[in-house]
Image (tube, rainbow, N blue to C red; front, side):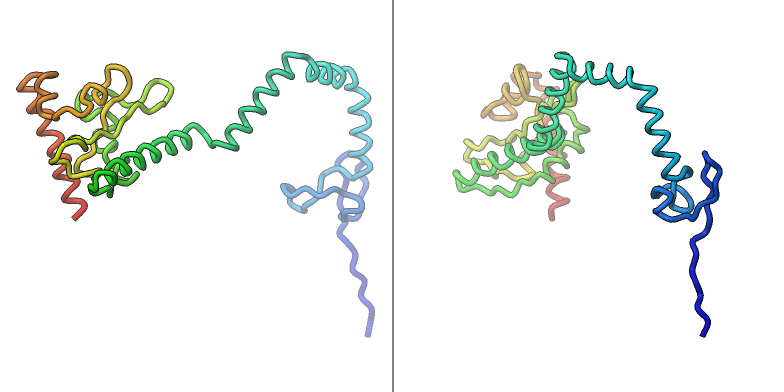
Length: 224
C-alpha cells in the first residue's frame, strides 16, 4: 500500500510575493477572506506593525496625552457611569415600561383593597393608548413630549371611591394627560359627567362622553 502525503496549498503573500503554504504557521486567520487567511504572511504583517509604530510615535504620544487630559477623563467617567446605569436599570424605554407596570400594579392594588375586580393588564393599557392614538382620551393632547417621555395616566373613569365603580378593568380605564394642568389631576375623583360639563360645557362634554363610552363598548366586545 502506497503512502500518500498531504500538503497544504500554496498562497502568495500580497507584500513579499512569496508562495508559502496556506497554514496558520505562515498566515493569520481571517474569517472574512475566501480561504480563511490574511493576504499578508505573518512575517510581513509583523514587519508592517513595527514600521507603523516607529512612524507614528508622535501620534501615539498625542493620543496618550489626550486620554490623560482632565476633560477626556471626565467625559470618559461620565460615559462609563451612564453605561453602568443602563446595564443596571435598562434603557429609557425599559425604565418607562417598568414605571407603567408599577402604576398598573398600584391601580390593581387599590381595586383589591376595595374588593373590586382588578383584571386590567399592561396589554389593556397598550390597547387603550393605541385606540386613542397616543393622545388624552378627553382633551386630545399628545401624551409624549419632545423627549419621548410619557405623560399618560391610567384614569378610572368611574372613580374607585364611587359605589358604582366596576373596578380596575379595561372597560373603566382611559389614558388621560397628567402633570400640572392635566386632565387626570383636574378630574381626580370627581364624577366624570359632572366634571366634563363644568370643564367643557354641555355640548362638548356630551361628545367626549360618547367617544369614551364607544371605546368601553369596543373593549367589552373584544374581551368576550
